[in-house]
Image (tube, rainbow, N blue to C red):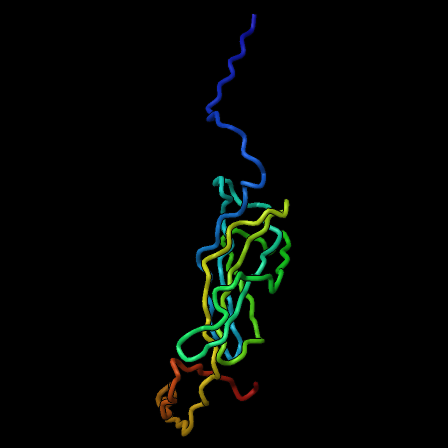
Length: 178
């Protein structure tokens, strides 16, 4: 005579519909102005809302709205974001925890832009919109004038007159062959 003992440690719970199991919300969306363009960056979620590993991500939807800056107030801000770009993914680039980025180049001076990113799984169910980022776009400051260099021991010191309104500077380097 043979006995078979089968054990289990599953937790009994009511079934969950597929539309409730979606990618977790993106919480690290950032927007950075870069050389006249706007860079959006975020991290691909690692889990679904039921805490299972996210393995079926197929796209991101970039949502946006805009308003016009009038004095210190924004006219038109607060409108419902609309789809402005779909970013399709392949199995190779849909890696959980990977940083994603996209550039936008069509911003206009004196406008306010709001962006959100939505993750979509292979069943075409969307996760919750990411943290919103607001961008106040204006004309870039002028390039620095009177740039001077001083050669040192294995270094070059750069100096220039500050530019009014600049919050930082990008410094580029190239070799003679470039």
